[in-house]
Amino acid sequence: MSNPIALAADHGGFELKEAVKQHLDAQGVAYVDFGTHSTDSVDYPDLAAAACRAVTDGQCRTALLFCGTGVGMSMAANRIPGIRACCCSDSFSCEYTRRHNDANALCLGGRVVGAGLACQLVDLFLATPFEGGRHQRRVDKLTALEQR
Image 1 (cartoon, one colour):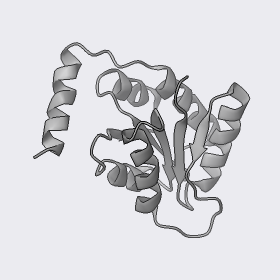
Image 2 (cartoon, helix red, strand yellow):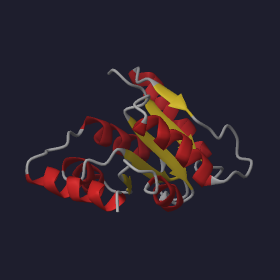
Image 3 (cartoon, one colour):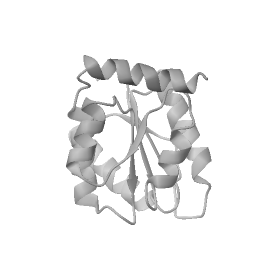
């Protein structure tokens, strides 16, 4: 693995981020933690932006983002050009957003997804390749939308 994974959470996703960090540590997966580092209230757009810019700058290969529902982080992340963030709470969506949409940021809700499922989704997200082919044309169209 050449690049680490970017991690970021707000106060609502902090505990889930910490559980996922333990899981990544056990697997020897490198990451950069962009915060937050407690359950004190913070603004999720700031944290999403820092982690996602690390992805678009090439410092990190993908981002794992955590907030209360995963939705706020997803909304913030998708405003960063080059980021294709998905908010998932099931394995099918998690797998196919990688296969067909080349998602590069997974958003999870600390108040929606338990630690066990979150770790399974993270593993699936990190292990699933983008299929390319006919899907590349569609991803290219997403990129074109960003540039308008």
